[in-house]
Image 1 (cartoon, one colour):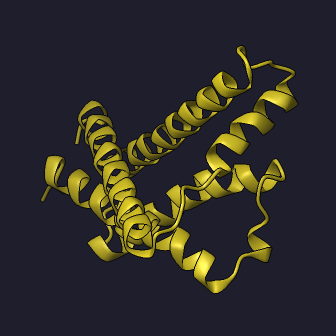
Image 2 (cartoon, rainbow, N blue to C red):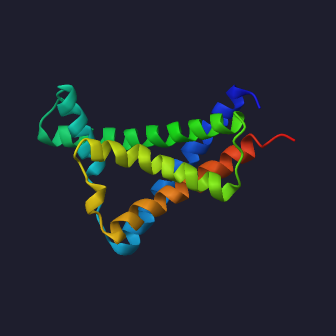
Image 3 (cartoon, rainbow, N blue to C red):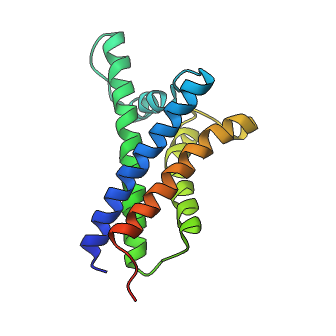
Length: 158
């Protein structure tokens, strides 16, 4: 498969997977009545602090910008992992959907949780089972949707 087509398939898969992750997250919030997580915007604040950057505006404006940037970082991570999945398929990695979906979900979870842990925003070692499930289920939804889209746009040859 041509690398360009695989990359586009991965980008589309990542975007679709990100939409699935958000849908599962918002459904969980609606069903359980839980609030939004502040970790994406806390991650933006930690990145800005480490980099010596100042987010402009008054406190409310900065919080709104942090929230928007946090969501954008999540989208970038999802599309990036999808792109990697497409390129991996072009390179010959064509696992069963359950394996590819689980791997993509784990990759997306790592792409979002590792920076939070490294920046001290959250410590996954302290998470409860419920916390892990709340994080893993949307990421698995991401992975299976992303992998299915990549396979459908750029199916294996032969």
